[in-house]
Amino acid sequence: MSSTALERLAVALAAAVLLCSCSGMPRREPLYVQLGGEAGITNVISRMLDRVAADPRTARSFKGVRLSYLKKSVSAYICKIADGPCVYEGETMVNAHADLDNTGSEFDVLVQTLREELDAAGVGNAAKNELLRRLAPSRRDIVRGTE
Image (cartoon, rainbow, N blue to C red; front, side):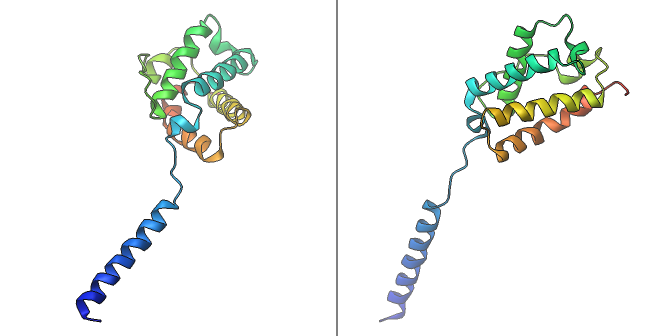
């Protein structure tokens, strides 16, 4: 076999190996899809907000708040940061929480409740952790009060 034929054979084999290995790789769905899309996000956020609004550890922050509006706003925010098609038109996290004096403990209760609702919805650990990673920077914008 000539060296040119061997080179062509080597290139063809390398290409075949690459094609076979690529087709077997699982594709990761976008976070938005992993969270159940708009319906999944809306359900998780609705249940989470119902729980934290009734929880004595966090209820003070929800007094006088229209939960129906808040559910829509928070759902749109989560959808947006999960790379979904939603448009968030609400306030910045700083402005939305400016007068609430939320404490670190209150924030932690909300995060734990969100985790529990994501688990209840069957959201996988990788998606749950990615969402929480994306939300983590908002802690500094939300927590203003002292324990």
